[in-house]
Length: 393
Image (tube, rainbow, N blue to C red; front, side, top):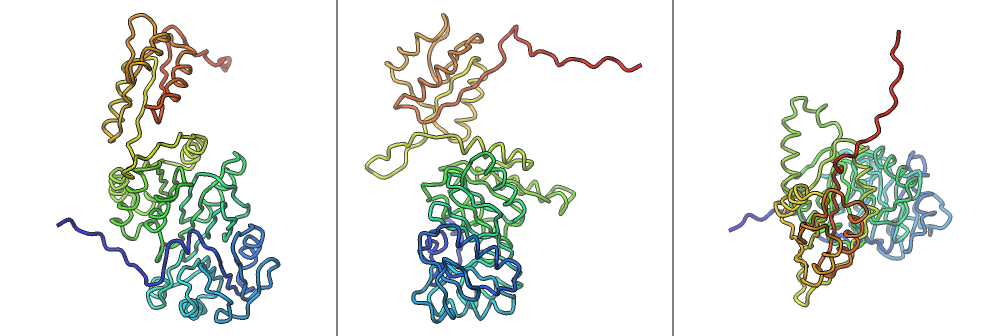
């Protein structure tokens, strides 16, 4: 029998309560440094559900005396409390019927507290949770993220702020920003399980520091990567292990899961910008309910380059689109003499603007879901060399 991957399921906890809450409560000690930022962000976010506040007086949030006195069980709790006050608050939440929480501050032993109370949490040290589509900004962000199709799952609050700052300048938005912090009870696997099923998420960015359960992570990452690109950055890997052995193991796990690892923040942001601006046409689902494989069309100005791309598509489990005879007839008008139509399709070294025209035509065909256009420098064309500085004497 195949080995089953164990998943700890807390009675009462539901992913929808965390990632699509209809009500939330901020339980905060005003003396905590994160309390004012969280209160202001929740109030200004325009949350589409009901938001309560216990502790601080927050305009726009319904005040409540204590957890037991809430008029309804909240889906989600944001706990900005000293460590000693966390377990009593989580026990009270469980009695009230709330089993999902965010813990932005320090919380030693959070996993054990979660096991005793039944409340699962993002944290300790969680950046928070942003879901712009429903107006939820329960985070420590300095700016409110705009709605979009990128999802960021991060352990670092500093990296989250850097990415959000960059995204605001580039006018890019997010479906989710999930700060898992110390990854004590709710981490990468739980987040990816949700994002894999979320139609509003087009690509996922991961900030990987420590993965508690590698098997669960690989399983969830593989499921997510089947339907959308998943990119990962891992800071501090060589600092923790100068030999690079642990990093090599992680790289192998990411490749196995279909996750693309990037080497630095600049690469992550560049890839994120590309993925955020790509708009794929929805693929019709057949009556049986199974999602068809994405059909890829390759067009290039060099057949060797096209064959390399086709090999990569097939090796990765992709499918090359089969062009219909009427489509090939239309393309014959674009092709130079001696270059036969097909997939991959080569227009010859001097394709020029025909490459863009062919890519647009491919994108309009019903038998093609994704177009990959590749261009190699044409012979006889050289880049202009930069001016040289005069020699120093």
